[in-house]
Structures are given as C-alpha cells and as structure tokens.
Image 1 (cartoon, helix red, strand yellow):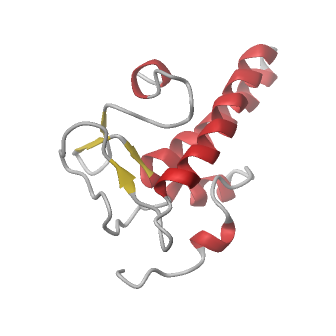
Image 2 (cartoon, helix red, strand yellow):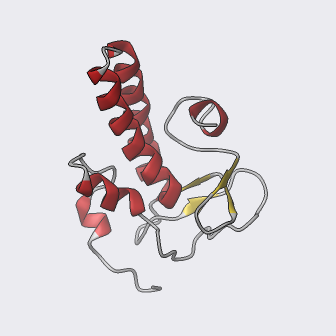
Length: 129
C-alpha cells in the first residue's frame, strides 16, 4: 500500500480508505494523514538520494509540491484544516477538530523538514477546539 493505493493520481492528495492508528478508517484527504503523507514524501526523497535513486527523489518532491498546494487550497477552511471525504463517511472528522489534525507538521519539525502548511495557520487555536 502507498502512493499507488492512496494517491493514484500522484498529486499529493490522498483518496480511498486509510486505516490509521486510532483503529479506524478515514476516507479522502485529511490534514492528519495528508500532512504525514507530505512529510513522508520528503523523507523518502532524502532516502532515495542516499541510495542514488535521484529520479525517484525528484518524483517524490514533485508529488509533495503539488500536494502542498492542493491541501492548502482545499483543506483550509479559513480557520483550521479539515478533512475532505471522497466517497462515503466511515470514521471521518470532516469539518471537526481532531487531536492529530496536523500531526505531519510536528513530525516535519522533528526531522528537520520544511513544513507543509504555512506556520501562521498552525499556530492559531481554532475557536471550535
């Protein structure tokens, strides 16, 4: 499972069902799984470079660049990041607040990767949380 399953168009915007660490399924693109996915693309690009897979590193970064734009355009509701469901509601949080809403930003900071979302959007507490 991976890019082929969750991002078949290779645009940095996930689709389909995604099992997660809360023992549930999410559908579509969420800032939670989406931000982790974007961070993992840069981490994967760095690993690809280490083993001499330069073309693969370029492809991962291309997907991430597109995904950063798409996620910021489609998942930012003006106050906080949300989830966009593609098919059917499973255990989605949609326009609600979620404990791991932008977990990929924390992970990016931990491993010295530039953030996926503008910092100004992740430092403000939403009024619904």
